Length: 331
Image (cartoon, rainbow, N blue to C red; front, side):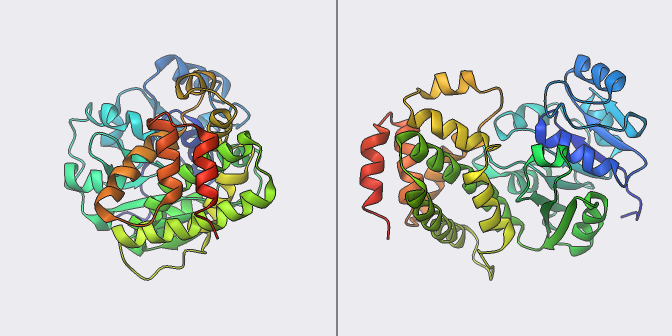
């Protein structure tokens, strides 16, 4: 891998926009795929994304914007995917270029619904990319705070530490601090699971539970996360590190958390459909809940919170009753 690689970002949402902004701090050029040509034309003229994270100023001179996904795949040495997991396969199906020689980082916090796999495993299985060339960009980091250049932290996970260190260099700045990890599978599962727990936190708030219960819910969530991840990928990891506990806390408590917002609406009595229609952004945790529930049917970890969220979202059970039962599971 060149010490001066071409980096390409795929996706037009808030997190993709934030990643592009971070990369512009240290790169001469950043490739950016968006399927909407009118959005590309607007960014070229106005140097911000009017649809997502509109307050983030972008350096137009550094942006190589394309609506042709294959052309950007050819361009990039490091490919960063920040497309919501529910739409990822549809975009990947457009790719005819060989991906096997590329370094691929996932900035997607979810499971690919069609395959039931985390994004890294999906790329490995379907595109023959070696695990050493697959990585994860994890938080705790909200796109909205990146736009405001508030101090934020990223964990860059990759089996090959050289790839993680290289990408970290391009993402670091005076407002972004990075650390590296070799736990790609655990980090990616944690990024997916924390969205489910954030929905639970939102539901609890919508139902009228207070801060005391929220603290107990988060405490039980991190232990449940540890049990779940240990079943899918057992290795030595400190679940209290920022990529796990830190990301869980910011997603569970932040006013910027779309998953918490979604859960809050469900707790207040919205149907799933009406809550989704009112939100302008994707709540990844909705799709992750079903995937995690199905994975755990095989692994049999103790997951009362995931089970509760699944029953409310997918079995149309009463949130008030389900949370009353859930409180008896906690200690």
